[in-house]
Image 1 (tube, one colour):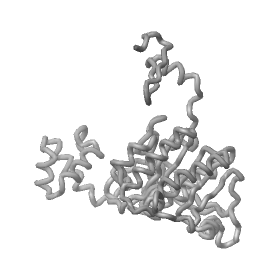
Image 2 (tube, helix red, strand yellow):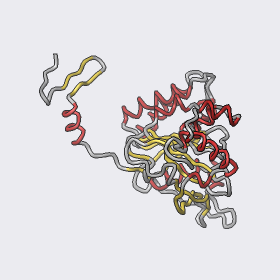
Image 3 (cartoon, rainbow, N blue to C red):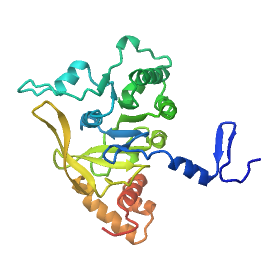
Image 4 (cartoon, rainbow, N blue to C red):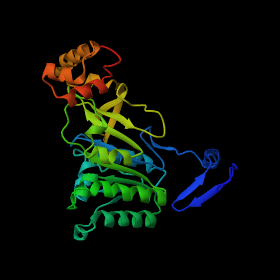
Length: 316
């Protein structure tokens, strides 16, 4: 039996057991994780950035890598672009100037001759481990989850891949950013975890999640935090980070943030009257099912509006 003393530790099978107080005092001796990039990604986290296609999430991921690689070694596993596409993306088309990245940023492509469907995600994880150890880097960006998992015949691959990646993270002390796609979004609705493809299975794997969205009114892009375990949710629905994708004279392509705003100001305003109706009916005490029947809208859509806009707390 375990003693009740504060300093007792026991290893029982798979478990290491300590008192809660011993757990806190031991952990307090280790340094707190530092932010790798703004409030979005901290050391030791497996983080996810997702968005619809062609919004600039890969551009933003490389922008993060460019910043971090100034004083740390970063590996970008690029399954999206060829080396020529990557070069052209970071070249000023008018002057021919090619962007100069920090020496600490390395890029990996998968050799097509090694593509083998059998045990694909297992091989990818082993190769990521081998590269991380050989290069002595603990910061890895994977672009993207969909590409890696489409190479497998199994529909369950993403979940298996993430489980193995989490194990690798803990074993080697990695910080990993995973890029993921979403299906086409309804621009009248705020971004939520449900927009992440395979969200229910994948969402719980990630320590932090943020997304890139597009304004329904113009070319504005925005960054929204969906989940964090380390800090506060600085850029939630009422304070998303907005800006444009721009290319500088030195060839660098990036998301240039300008201000913050409420995400609801960026959504498709055609839904405003419907939202007001739902808010009014909810304030009158109608159930989600009754509102759905009355307005001829599915229960799931009504339920999401009630949750996302907190319609139980206030009438819009």
